[in-house]
Figure 1 (cartoon, rainbow, N blue to C red):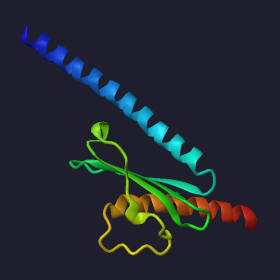
Figure 2: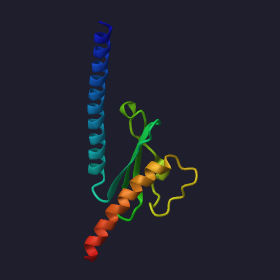
Figure 3: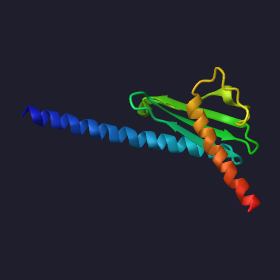
Figure 4: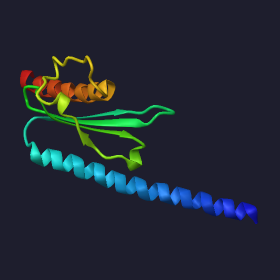
Length: 129
């Protein structure tokens, strides 16, 4: 009988995780859609850092075509319970010339910048081909 109670609790935990993941996925999609409608030109890069025993991070960067950061949103912590926060310290900086001293969340922002640079490279390759 004790094992039935454990199985019920385990099934409840799995269902709760599935529901929270669903709602968090919808929150992420709404955030991306909001940013793409607000900034119709430029590039959008998403950086993701996952660590085994530490909370993950997600960064969403929006830049102008010249690489100037227009908006930087970062989500940290237990992903299901977290929300994106706007980090103004990156806004207005060029992705090719950021001073990384005293910047928070460097790794995840650098991952998002790498995605933007890949987009810029693929656009430039289209023009030269």
